[in-house]
Amino acid sequence: MQTRQQVLFDIFLFAAALAVALWSRDTGHNVVWGMWLSSLVLGYAYIVWSIGRWVFALKGGAFVGGVFSGVFLLGFFTFHFGMFHFGHAIFLNDFFPIPVSGERTGLFLSFDHYWWVISHYWWFLLIALLSERSAFMEPRAPLPKEPGNTAKALRKVNLMKPYAKVVRLHILIFVFAFADTVGLTQALILVIIHAAYFLPWRNLQALLRKPSHPKKGSPSAAGP
Image 1 (cartoon, rainbow, N blue to C red):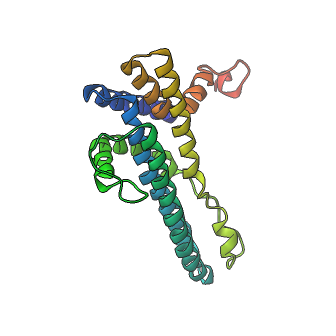
Image 2: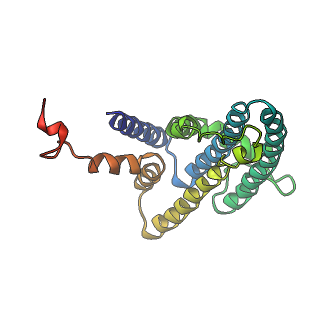
Image 3: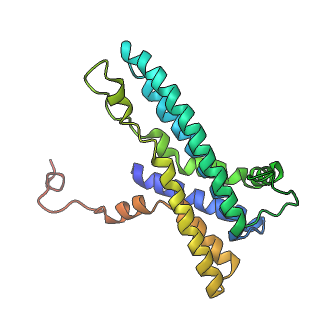
């Protein structure tokens, strides 16, 4: 029942995001910036959340070591994850130019470019946050039994997970290229993009595979 409710809610998010994109006469080339914004903000939020909840779960001497380790990891991933996405923005802008008149300030895009992305795709970010809710609600792996083993505890934090989300963005870039080649309409392109990004394919597949009735001979089918 819970999986069914989650799937229905994700389908609603897909429909809501698609409706906003169609209503605003959006294009597939512009939606990619909503995905970039979501990857940056939600990915960094996941990193901060993961480090924080592990550090504050440590006890005694491990907590002190965890604070220093957590500050180091947060500083490292703030720089690395941030630079990764700002560099990625330069790459994306070459293929999907942001429609503003501002020029690049040095290596990176100008403030006007980033503000265009935020002002046009804040709604995409909010819907993506609801769609990615499971990442922030997943149970934390148990702490090691050794009370002072900070390093072993923090190794269980999967801080590379946000980087994997960028792979989906690159796959959709190839979808854009294929769609343009075969001459698909913008409306159909938007449907494909939002379906790939928002629909819960794994949960939907699991729900379809789940038997609707218990098998004969099972304890639940036997009755009282």
